[in-house]
Length: 310
Image (tube, rainbow, N blue to C red; front, top):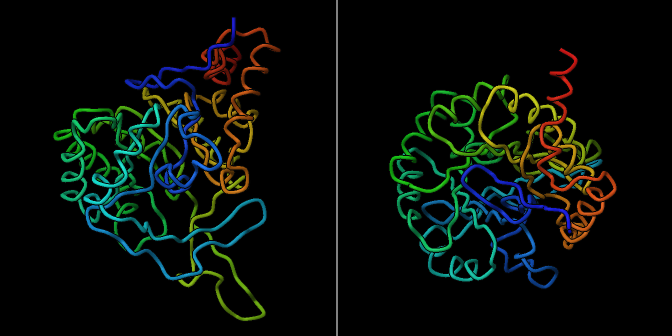
């Protein structure tokens, strides 16, 4: 019997634990020449705001050792165009669909959430409260526990489906923010978003990004992301989606071992757009080699070992 790659994720039941990360997959159409979005356990669309956003000045992306800096600025067509032009196509992918939303204030999040409530094909919303490269909107909520709690609470009043809170690593203690999101009524946590970083051309005496700083992603941040998922899973009862520097099946299993129940692929999709196929194949092979019937047997095994030592 083939290994079971499904993992319950709170109220969601994805067919496998591999999601695309917001901002790295567009709305799916861009990836269709390379891989069917339906091969993922779920796809998370690029952040949607109430009104269209033009984004930040170019250049917006800079390669760094073992990663990249981006300062896209949440460019998107706005929720009206998303609902009319993009959502119908995304419904056809046959996998879990998560709509990521961002706002300049609580009222904007609430309005978008209310418009997404009951939309056919939308399985969950992800609250972007962690974007590090926008002048307004997002991260000011994710660095303040009370603001996080109130935002999630207000969104839950108007949205009946699963709510995912996407957490920022740019805080002193991410567990405080995680508990606040849980107190507000989040169903799932996703972590982490990018770290604030900077690239410099010392010869030209200038920053490599017009806005000076951007979000650092890629393999360089994986050890930090693993640590934060491990920390949050020790204090929260919510299921966790791990994000940060995942390049292969071994990386996926590392995140599961520290307590995640799913992962999101981000930067790797820019260099290996078909990587999900390799990861799913290798996950099946690894389970067979270990004599395991399901991925569930691996979730949180680091914690179980800690408990035995205690």
